[in-house]
Amino acid sequence: MSTLIDVARESFLILDDDFRVISASPTFYETFLVNRQKTEKKLLYKLGNGQWDIPELKKMLGGILPKKKVVKNYKVEHNFQTIGRKTMLLNARQIDTVKLIILAIEDITDKENLKEKLAEYTKGLENKIAERTKELADKIKELELTNRSMVGRELKMVELKKEIVDLKKRVKNGNGNGNHKNGNGGNGNHKNSIRK
Image: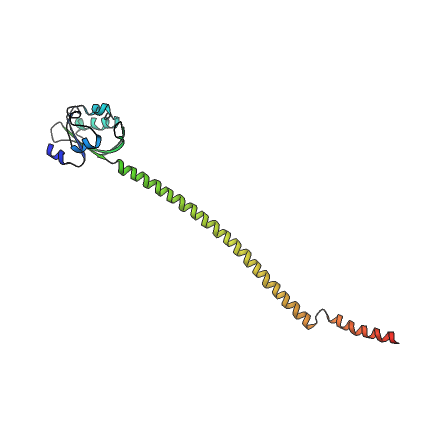
């Protein structure tokens, strides 16, 4: 049993039915910065000046021996005095018929922090995309208005050009100015009448 615990990569504790620590894995000592002398034969809840006196942990462990219950991936968050805030996944079960509990503790703090950062980054990206989309929509609207205005001006220019061409044709054909030309003839008659 101790050999198995010594080579385990996760933190392990073997507890008796009073929740005293019989042995712990080297990973447990490294992760939680405790030593063998202050851990073995000590009540779990009194380890590290009561740092392991965690209500969720008590509740979880309290249901194992009487009910022979297996606990899988029980998430616990706790603020330790020496190592700060930790997020742990606890797996526990009774070992065979012996009244012992094996408690595996996986430190998932880094994973959870990474997940939070990723969620924040994703949210930030979504906000930036929403801002950029709004900016683009505003620019498109502005361009559409400018385009409409320019097309309107262009159409007006075409109309004005047509009017100018029509006016030139009318002037060339004498429409509307014919009376003026005849008036010159009248002026000629007027001159003749003065001579007399």
